[in-house]
Image (cartoon, rainbow, N blue to C red):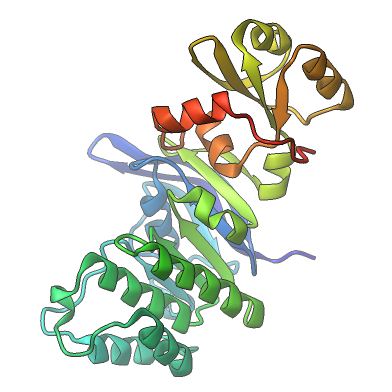
Length: 311
């Protein structure tokens, strides 16, 4: 039986008349990597703050391993929440941050911390408040992975990191997860980069859950079609269209249905191309992703990819 690490029911948080999280009811399974996706202000950080008992809900409930986490040290110490704006005391150096984490997290692995500090080349002499944005993110990654907390949250953990450093993070996360499975929740905008990490996704928009499902199920439940606008419009007339965009006389659409043999036949007859839809494209199709640049959209329309499996 699949165990439940986190369960929320009707979870709501209001701030001075604004609703940051609205009636969120969901379950997050134990030992999975879940992506928390949505625009800035969608409620991602609020959700993580409530689950880790760093804030209290206006209404609704949170349970972690079957217990309410607020003011329960035995539950809180089993969770690690690395914020995108993590703050440290003014006089803290790297050694102080590591020492504090080693004391707080009962499953702390110093060997992991040492390896990651070297991999990210985190300096030991300056105080942390003098770190660059990338160095702060790298320190957060070290603390999160080395904590070995059964439930670990990363809020936009890659800010300021270059492509090489981000690749180190992704590889180290997968390596550690394979050797020591735990529940990991990642808030991210770099959906294409983290695609290979995620098993499930929660898509938030204006504080509400738009979709919560396995990544493979989401991908298998949609496909993309592209070609001449008139032919495409006829093709999608009786189908569930999640999004449509056009450049000149060409258009592309994401269809929120599994692709069928008759879809392929109809598309071929109409001179249209069917391709699999990426997770980034699918999230954008739900209206909650960062919009593509015009150049990216134009490239997608003018040079359809070779067909991949969309089923």
